[in-house]
Image (cartoon, rainbow, N blue to C red; front, side, top):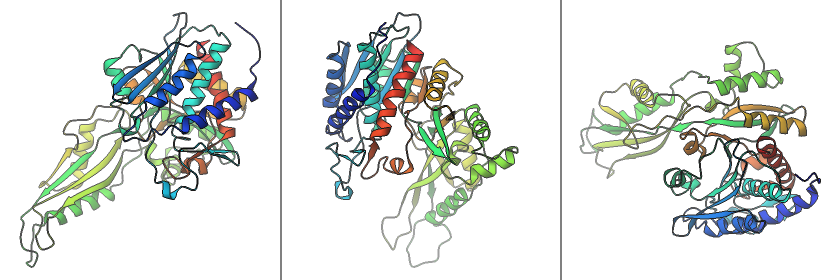
Length: 434
């Protein structure tokens, strides 16, 4: 194993140019067309002698897999990322969304935050491990997938179904958690779990009739009353081991006030951004009713976006919603037509988590590292269902301004965060694999 030091300024400059070129590849989904991005990243690894494979999941859509072999003494680590990005409304951007503009210490472009910069951090780690001829006890597997922004069926879902050999790893790193500054403390949240979708459809059927008469059975009115009851439903706070540990570390760091569950619950409820980590969420997103202004609707429907905590029973949740609706004439059914699959809980007291802690503390002694939960949905759900300890973690300290551009206009990441992410990603992988 070579002991030569890494020339980080040179690596930072290389990472910046890789990201700028990557942002210029338009992988807007739909339609995706991620194959050019897969080939670009793959070519970077292949040029260093890293074995690369391309897996077509649909015309123009490819997975790129780069693998550094370990000695087989431990199971592999996946560096997972997605190649596709969400659409842009270019007229609302002040910078071109697909040119990789660098200005005032920022790199602008769709995907700068979500999540092409993370893909660059991971590919740079692959290049460094190869260049340094690092002996590995685990395979390190770089996996860039298409289609995450549309659910992942043609990306990570495809791999899990058709190429289980690629996802046969012990650990995975993907998106979901990151660093931030809270009350003067640097906090790094590692998303060790995530919520899962259990969308519901409420259907009210009433007696249609002419709009000029008095009516006692308007399906839309009954549905509206049910939706108001659901909106006013005061659901309790639920703790899982990850969020318990999160709160304990926040209290120990002085970010939260201690004093028991009642004090903690008051602080949770005061933070809308945090509340979804501690309770199932329900939001009305689509309502359908009526065919004409002067005709009462015979049928009125509403779709509810519901996200449940890991370990929750979807059928029990459906029955609870039915109880709150309190109208036997309104049906409550899963929007998909079938009971959703529960999200398995993933342990966080693992070698990978401790490697993340050690790496962060080596760089920032006073930083707080804590398990947390992703309130959205990521590709990690496919891996967790297969028993992989998949964590969401991008090792950068994102400002509120950066986070606001996630799926937003003028999306950007700072050069400082790109540099930090490259250094910490490499160090985490080195600790857990070398």
